[in-house]
Length: 416
Image (cartoon, rainbow, N blue to C red; front, top):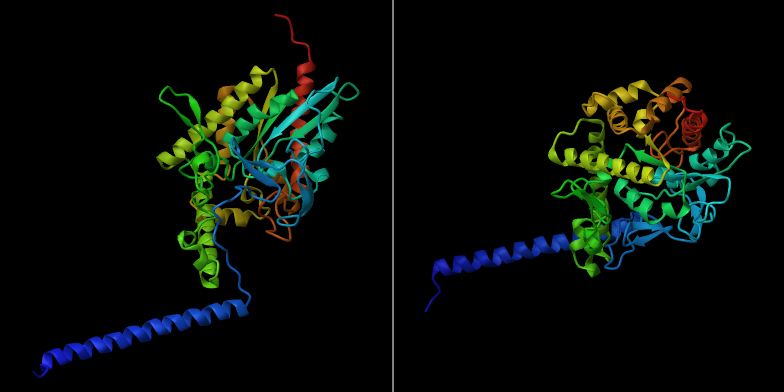
């Protein structure tokens, strides 16, 4: 029986299809091979796949912690040469500070500083940090000079939000019996840090309001697999087989591009800090944040200590060029660059605690002298974290506020 013309035609089409598919796959394979060779020859690096066992910590000086997400590693030391430069030395209690006895020495005024990377301040040497300078300046305050020794203890940890600072207060700060607690609040991301809906780095405790209106901790981060802990550090590439990702420069570069895009998305999200909350997620983030600040104040007062909220501004707020600030506001539809500072100032007025906003005073200085209080030549000039000037300005302003309060507390109250 002879093959029909129709059958012959179908077989011919299948043969042609097979040839085309083979050529396509072969071309793709050769393209991948050429791409792999080209990337290696050009020494273009990407990111390997995230491991199954990860110490969820921002640097080698940190380690994971079941209560806080991460903390400074007791006894860690080494050179920091990322943004800025310093010798990092962590004391035996996991603080970037010298050793302090937990028992407060006689005739000593102790100040505890809670905060994030601006307070940890690995970007500058210890002697340049605002808390180190504050200790020296406060020792010359007339209210304590010649009467008391001043100790300022640094409890700041990179990446912390207000939730972690509240837990740090409870877990560690009270062991040192401070007389004053300063909460350094970073305008740039602390509100985001306190929201599981806004924050990308989810390996951290959060707080939420329960049905009775009470703030309660959410410690579910303890159960997160490494791949689910940080959307800014994890790409869809990480869900591919390890053997494939770790041996493919193309996939590693794709991962790098994807993660850089995610970081850019976060930078755009941060512009919402300067605006009235536009949706439920931001409204709740601010509600929880303000509740956490008030809770910290309440617990400080219960311990018969004094409380001060210091707001650390975003680098854009202190840019010396007025035109740069104006362009940023227009581009991001921002009406008031100091909205978060004013909001927290109103919170302090309502709840009865002091708020020291640094941003406007920083801006006045940097604009007058055309200097940058943020940034380093090796990273982002005029952006990022405080440089030595920023820390010096902060120490002056905080010292002025604290010293004035100490002096006022010594003035005898008039009898009614």
